[in-house]
Image (cartoon, rainbow, N blue to C red; front, side):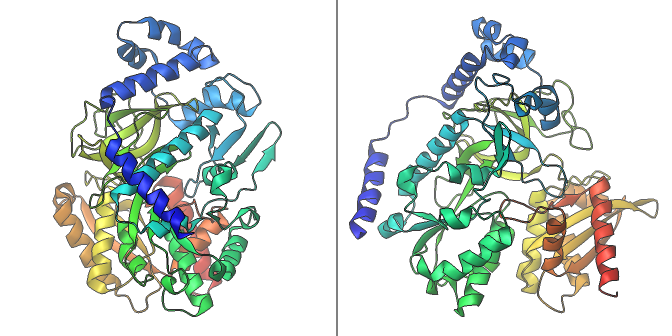
Amino acid sequence: MAIIGNLISRSLRIRKKFTVKLGTPRQYQLQVLHRLLEKAKNTQFGRHYKFQEILDSPNFMAQYKTRVPVHNYNKMNAEWWYKALEGEDNVSWPEKVKYFALSSGTSESASKHIPVTRDMLRTVKKVGVKQLYSMANFDIPPRSFEKGILMLGGTTSLYEKGDYYEGDMSGIQAKNIPRWFRRFYKPGGRISKKPNWEQRIKLIVRKARQWDVGTVCGVPAWVQIVLEEIIKYHGVKNIHEIWPNLAIYIHGGVSFEPYRDSFQKLLGKPITFIETYMASEGSFGFQARPGTKGIKLVLNAGIFFEFIPFNEENFDADGEVKPNPKSYMIHEVVEDVEYAVMLSTCAGAWRYLIGDVVKFTSVKEHEIVIVGRTKQFLSLCGEHMSIDNMNKAIDMVQKKLGITVKEFTIAGFPYQNLFAHRWYIGTDDVNVDSNKVREIIDQTLSEVNDDYAVERTAALKEIFVEVLPNEVFIDYLRCKGKEGAMNKFPRVLKGEKAKDWQSFLETKAVANGK
């Protein structure tokens, strides 16, 4: 079987040598938008916004921006997608939608239903093939291409809802994987169908020795839990004693940096870490060059990107977009500016704010890093604290105190006529000094964020830190029905979410007799 790995590896390198760029980023994106408009022009959405007139315009891009308003999920769903859920076809894309992805969300009780069309499934596969080709850029042993690929995603047992099926996007993708891929796919069809996350984990842990896994894919927090359970159950020192050929970890969903050090402790030898950019709305890019943190956006696969500067001119204090924001195409962006990502897709999303905030690390290579969410930032008094800032602070806490922080979240609140932040730190290490954690967080944020440093001398009066067992965070997701591979704990809690979290902690303290 080793010859298969060598053949795949060699073919990827040969293809890389003869790949020729056929167009500029601007040309690719204009072509994508034109195709999207052409295909959807006779849908209900396309007729309403007169796509044919847009296409007939000498500057169809400018007309598109002028005629089609910005949508978030609530607007898109309330005006259009609800019809598709009720069984109508040809709503915002020319077909009857068979699948709806339930967004992973955070702690919200109601899941969002994102249409997943046949064209979108083809696009996801196309991006996956492009990522496979990019593997030629990395120093990956040829044998890794013949080993199993463990995908820790949602269940493939989708819920039938009359005319459609709903479930996690990862589960929908796994259910539609190509036949040739099934021989590599782990944990396999039988285990993947188990709807209960804990049951799937137990079966994966028990069967781990039976598989020869070369690649693991999944959200860092849950992958780390699974690897820890495998190591514990089989009584080994690291995961390479179970899977000696494990060489690749493909991750996404959240920043990997807070997990990197603790993840390394689970390994017996170095592996290649590759970040991807995926969501319920589609697959957008992947890390294509070793030694860089940037994710390369795929510009010719059914997704049209616009970028809105994430500032006070375009967004209000709650992260809601203001009317008629200024947006830029891929060739108009600049590096080190925060942008909210807006998509038009082959699943019938139009000028749709996905909620991510990114920075371009390389305009030339159209590479980005995700620095936060439009609604998961903290700026009670002008401190403008992003998730990227928070991740750096937690990373410093881990390094200086030698602890592992698996989860964390932050809430802001009025305090003594001014304001305060409260950090909730999830770790299973004992005797962690919350005062030292506080000092490191405060110092790090003051160094990386000038606005934060200024407000710490003015309106941001105090910082509080509460250290909790990591299980508390998992219990909260579980009680919200959000436990599982695609679910992520919110980094920032605001309004009712913050109150709900605090109520949960108080109830748990009473139950534990504290």
